[in-house]
Image 1 (spheres, rainbow, N blue to C red):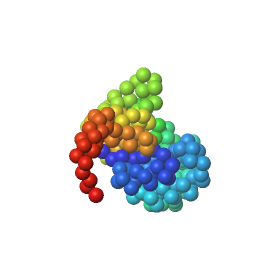
Image 2 (cartoon, rainbow, N blue to C red):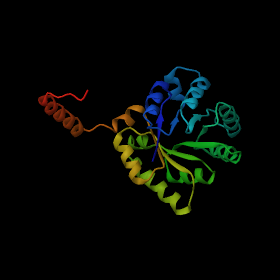
Image 3 (cartoon, rainbow, N blue to C red):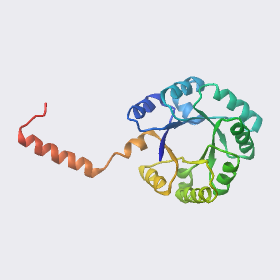
Image 4 (tube, helix red, strand yellow):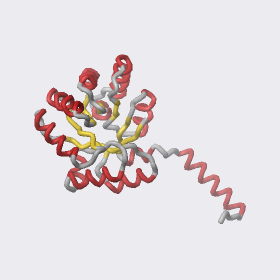
Length: 217
């Protein structure tokens, strides 16, 4: 499973990229707002930093507007994935942009039917929102499983990009189901390395090592 980091914080992206832990980046208007920077400037910096896809979101609500904004965003870098919402206009824009050879990430997916439509429109990525479904007491992982089954049934090449991930357990479950990609905040990706037994083991080893009175350097 590929890891994308869901942020517009370039310092956090650089840190994870240096650890070779990410394969791409997803951004959205809310993340750009948190970064407090010009969308084109920060997106260009991110694209220069990572080799994989960088999702940059359109804000128009009509297909023509999304297409025009997509063309403008695509000028930033070759690894831009144009992000459009899962509406009929978004699907129309997706079909147009993918026919032109652009990567398209169809976002705000909350049902298997929506994901099926996105695949038929040629989406590069479909972004089902796990955490937001969990907030409604609906198991977001059931949606990932349904999409995986449908895509495998018909050989759709659209990649399942598990989004709105809140915990390291979400990452594990998405991987078990077979999501192609998971995008998560930097803190969630880093938390995957944590385990209380690892911490206890290190502590015990260091205490025993201290008793030996030895040094490696």
